[in-house]
Image (tube, rainbow, N blue to C red; front, side, top):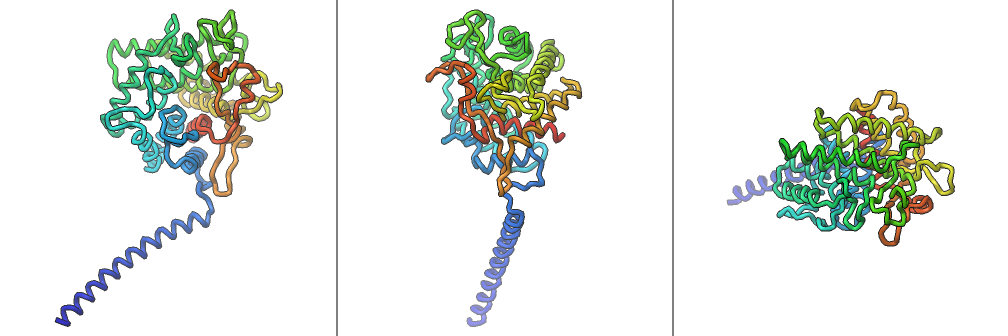
Length: 417
């Protein structure tokens, strides 16, 4: 009996010993990892390329992807999707699962099992709310979850009901009647085009693609300033808004980010618009005139762009990060895709270097910051935003706005190709 007990004790001790060994081995690996981090002292290693450094910094600042752009609770809003678009490309490039998990978490948190979208209200007909549909198109392609398909169909239904101007341009929101904003082209058109490519065929698809191209044709007709080649922030077909010119219906200024949104809209739509669509060549021609116009207002010394594009010397104006990142992304992607000649890379690179030199700071722990981002700007509403020069330069300025970090990562990825 003692012999048996003795053997049991030996076996128990051996099992315990192997457990201790395993635990020790795991602790050792963890300690080594921790030591490696602490030796470099960096949360974000400096040897990585700028795309990953900024992405990891965003993930550090906003541990869950719904928090991007300083959200306090899970909310269906557009800025997250820009950073997550960059995360998709980084995952494809590196295969690092942490990037995929960050994207997937957004879908899990924001879409209920029955396909309901958290905080989304279709009846508001807010075109901003289509942009995050791009994340769901990606997740549905990867995971084929029914809830994502249902949510996508809901967002597509919004397009059918979205109010339009008399000639057919989408209103920006139901609460902004007869108004077309440059922002809306980015918010709605890449999603509309991508959804059509994935789910629609035949005559119905052709009709959708024609409608998408028309949105750009209409903007070029109604919002373009022929003298400078720049586009105004918005146009009020009814000419009733206090911010609208009584003769043209145009808002009074060229806001940097509005132009930024428009450029990104064009280059991203071309990812999904069929190669043989007759409107494709027109959009490429719009990109060319757009690039020429923004190069003219690029600061010769810093390579950056101002909050109000054509008034660099006026009091209060500043070199603004989100617009600068968007312009750089639009141009370098256009060069890489062959929409612009290679010579345009010079202006794009000057802008990119200007961002890194003047607007990027790196904390001691390696975390990267993008500074001098305009937090928000719009027209109308309460309190009333009049579109004046003073209005734009006095809106809040902050660091690490997703509307800047997202385009910066996307531009970095284009330069890293």
